[in-house]
Length: 463
Image (cartoon, rainbow, N blue to C red; front, side, top):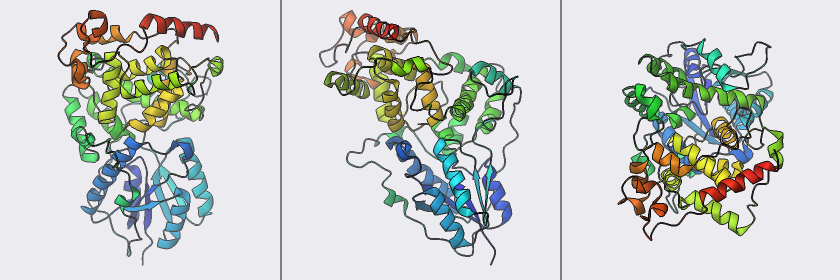
C-alpha cells in the first residue's frame, strides 16, 4: 500500500497552472480535498453570493477530476482539524496546498502545522498572485504602501513564468476516504431563490474562466476607455474566476500582455489585486478599521436610527432616486457583480451622500458579490472613503448624475431600472430635474448639494 498525498484546495479551484496540483500528482496517488470551513474565518465566512459560486465551482472541479480518474473529497468543519484527521485516516505523509494570506488562513496554516506535529509535512506553494506577497521591497527594505511604486517594481519582474500544464491523469489512492454530499451543504439559496438569474450571467469553473479570458482578449485594447462605460461590455469580468482561483493571474497576464501596447491599463488593474493583498499583509485589520487615525472618530450617521437604516436599505435595494446608483445596486442583486466604474459611484454615494460608515457598504458587498475578496473589497472601500493608506481624498465627492452622463450610462440604466426604460438621453441621467421622471420611480433620497455640504461639514470635524 502506497502513502497518498493530500491536495488541500481553497480559493485555487483549478488544475491548470496550479503548483500544488503538479507537486502532489508527482508524488503518486492524490486525495483532492475541499473543506468548507465556517469556523476559522469567524465573521468572515463566505457571503451568500460567493456560496452560490462555490457550489457550481466545486461541481465543475469534481467533473474535471473525475475525467482524470480522480474525485473531490468534501468535508465540513475546522480545516486544521479535518485535514489532520484525514492525514491520520489515509496514512498521508504530505499535504500540498497553495499559500493563502487572509488572516484566518494564516492562522489555519499555523494551526494545521501544530496539529501535524512534524509527523506529516504541510507543503505550501505559490500561485494565487503574480508575485508572493512580501516579495517587493522599497529602497529602505520595507513593504510598499503606495500603489504606483508597487506597480513599477512588480512590472520590472514580469512576465510571469509560463503556465504549468494540467495533469492528464491523477492516480487514485488505494481507498477513497468518506466524503460529504455537496447538496447537504445548502450553499444555494431556496426561500427565496434570489440567485435564480445568476446562471444567465456566469459559468463558474475553469472552462468558464478560459472562455471569459478569450472573449476579453479580443477587446483588451479598448479597456483603457471601455472600463468606464457601463453600457458597453468592455471589461474582463474575470474577477470571480480569479477570486476562486479558477484561473491564475499569471495565465491572464501572459495572454493579455501579448495583445499589444494598449493593454497596460488592464495589467495595472490586475496588479491592483496583488497590491491589495500587500496592504492586508501589513495591516490585517484593514477590513474592519480605518487606516487613517483621524477617521476613527468620524461622525458617521447612526445606523440604529430608523431614518439612517431606511436610507441604507434604499441604497441596498437600488431605490435612491439616482438612476446610475440604482442601476448598479440592482445589477449587483441580479447578477452578483457590478461594473467597476459603477462600484465607485455607488460606494461614494453611500459614504458621502448618505454619510454611512464605509464598513456597512463593505459588509453588503461581501455578502452580495460573487467576487467578494477580502483584500480587494477592503482596500477599494477605504480608497473611496479616503480612510485608506493610499486612497482618494474624502473631499473629492463624486457627483453621480454628472458621472452618469459623462460615461454614457443611459443604456445601462434602461437595462437595470425598467421604470426608466422609455426615457431617452440626456434626460435619463436626472429624470427628476428634467421633468421626465415617471410616478413609478422614486424622488431623490437627498439632493446632491445638500449631501455634499453635509459630508464636508462632517469632514471638517475630523480635519
